[in-house]
Length: 441
Image 1 (cartoon, rainbow, N blue to C red):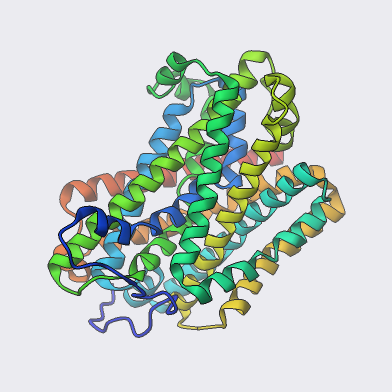
Image 2: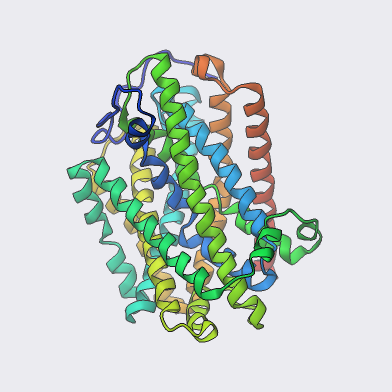
């Protein structure tokens, strides 16, 4: 593996780099407040519209049984994001820059191509999710909704000019909105607390039932988003810690706490989607509900609460918007990190947005709105294909003592990381094969 001692020449997202001061005080809570933010930008990728369909289908068909899969997925996510924190703090590089510096130019180029494809696929899912929410809430045709949602780039550019804290604040507000909406939905659906607790316990039935296993792998496969690994390793560097060994360890500790807390909220929201689906549909006989639109139409009639469907759609809109904001940031980080090519932020985001808008519009115009579900599934398959090409470099780099120095992964963390990486790769490969075989038949 090529090695260079030269520090990274120019940080990604230079407008936010080292822009948030860290107080040099003993107070835990003041420091925690300074480091709070990046974890929430990352967490939205774990509750994006691409995850909703699998959670809804899993709850409707199998009740609370797949909650254990959501819990396992979240634990893997916490592990991978902690590696991103280590890499960003220890090396001063994000994952894209580290790949460029430590792998061959040819390999780095292909890693960049695969990551760009994944970001477009992710952006496509977020865009469709937001457009579906607009259609459900306001009756706006899906094609027009896709165009309207493409304009959120302007919002992000305005926030970036005001400072990175404003971007974080907006995303935290959107995440809080999703959480509040699903807290209300859980209260409306009155789930069985005992059944929920049992659902978090692993069970052999998941491995023995092919249909249950397929949905379980869908949940696992869509959990760790490739662009999140690049994003987190960059935005953790928006904090201005002192470049000493002690302060770097401190930054790793507080940034890891930030992402773990944020991902715990993502665990609650993903669990809530499945719990509401199980309590509302599974135990009422509507076990074939798998589409977001079907869940929306049935929520209010089944629960007998007129606001239930509208609250569901508001949560979907907040989910799509928060996820697409972070996907555009990740696009900028990946291009600058791999290619050292800096475009104007508005141009980079416009390119990313158009790459998602065009296939969405073509699908809607040519095949009708009923095909959006298939497009969402396709986007998740693309993400599954790319995921190992982000996870394996991350684990390899953070295991490299020459690169990481004293911050290299300890043996126990290496074992956990490689186990998780191989598990993710095998499960995604299985999901991809099953999806392709399904299409062929």
